Amino acid sequence: MVIVGGPNSIYIPELPKSREGRSRLRGVRFIHTNLKNEPISQDDLMDLIFLRLDLIGIIGIDTHGGAVNLRIAHILPSDKDKSQGFEILPPVSFKNLEINFLDLVQALENELERNRLAVSEKKGKDRAILISLTTAKKETAVASINELKELATTSGITVVDKIIQKQREINAKYLIGKGKLSEIILRALQHGVDLLIFDQELNPSQIRSITDTTELRVIDRTQLILDIFAQRAHSREGKIQVEMAQLKYLLPRINVKDDALSRLTGGIGARGPGETKLEINRRRIKDRIANLEHELKNISKSRGQRRSLRTKKDLPVISIVGYTNAGKSTLLNTLTHSHVFVENQLFATLDPTSRRLRFPKDFEVIITDTVGFIQDLPKELLDAFASTLEELCDADLLLHVADVSNPQVEKQIDSVNKILTQLDIQNKPTVIVFNKTDIAPKDRIEWCLNRYKGVAISALSTKTIEPLIDNLQELLLNSIITGIS
Ligand SMILES: Nc1nc2c(ncn2[C@@H]2O[C@H](COP(=O)(O)OP(=O)(O)OP(=O)(O)O)[C@@H](O)[C@H]2O)c(=O)[nH]1
Ligand SMILES: [Mg+2]
Image (cartoon, rainbow, N blue to C red; front, side, top):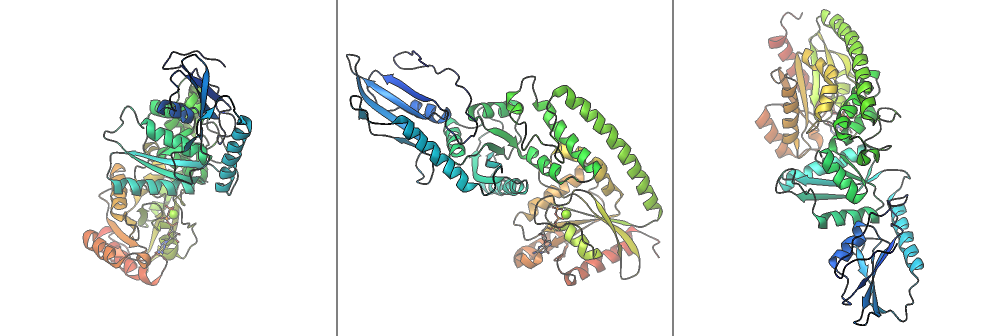
């Protein structure tokens, strides 16, 4: 392609999209003249990176119009030496050019490929860079992006980098500065990344502008959480709830001809529960949501009937609530000697489980374990899980499990309380339990007990939960339920 520009600038038309395999260069070398025989400029380097060019070459011209020097820059395939990510070769005389361009480009691509293979233990695994655009304090931002990393890992993604970008205002027009963007593009190329995950919710135009400049898939925290739920949902009800939440989240983000989202087809952000693929056609999404809503209504009707049977038996209900991974299912298991799925990962439990629990003073209660909470739990998800969470409204007592070994325990308690308020059950009698005392620092346990008046336990050890059982027993006998024999 030959382009004619002015003395100081040139307009590059839209290039074909990158070839298959994001770890590859564009397959285009960009050679232009410079009338003053000047060194490679910042603009040239930005073009090199933003367009993922194989290389950029600048032919210096003398006053008679003859070619003098050739200057070449190319992207560095690895970030090992922590350089700027590109290399500028020393100028060579145009008269005795001895560079074999094809070999040079081939060598670069080979190294990119080698690096990519070196990071990916499992083929086909998504690799992502996490990005937080935040006005929050550093500490908060770091904790939040670390949690995002755990979410990503839970979802089967390999995280190769985390970037925190401080914003002066929320939702600034230019989300990410050009310098930062070029850094992201470079790292993505160097690490064979094809996915960016943002810690903050993005609006459709933001998603589009980032996808367009980076040519990478973009999802946000909410979509990641929804994806985990989609992978975890087992019951028919759970699956419907998740798919509905996913579709409701996608709907306002889809335009008539939305390249940004159609690029999402397949992979995270576009897969529904089980092995299904999410619908990404506006009209069909609406139909699908209506169908799902109908089906869900039928299911929760029969659940309501089941529930009313149970309450007739007059057994008090204790519901375990708490931040995800706090140890809720472990506690249920220890309390009732059962074997509910426990895993050191976020959102191990999705479907509610109920067990009977007999107290030493010989009365029974029903104890239920349900889905864990997380900060900024997507509203779509909360709505979709309304019928599951409705069970919480029936509870006579909430057992709020907090992971005291986590430095963020206070924040997590706040997040849970916020969600309880959203569900309008913040005033239910609640016992707060500080779990994982076996691996928590003593002073933090002390501090929490003082601040919240809870019970400290380790759900792994039957012995430590004895005081909790006594405590619950007293509460149930004295104040909450009257007339238990
Ligand atoms: N050290 C220690 N680990 C614990 C304790 N209680 C639970 N765990 C571990 O914490 C992890 C999460 O436990 P779960 O019981 O699955 O937590 P959960 O609250 O049900 O989590 P979700 O269902 O994912 O929301 C598991 O690896 C447990 O073995 C404890 O008292 N001490
Ligand atoms: Mg659980």
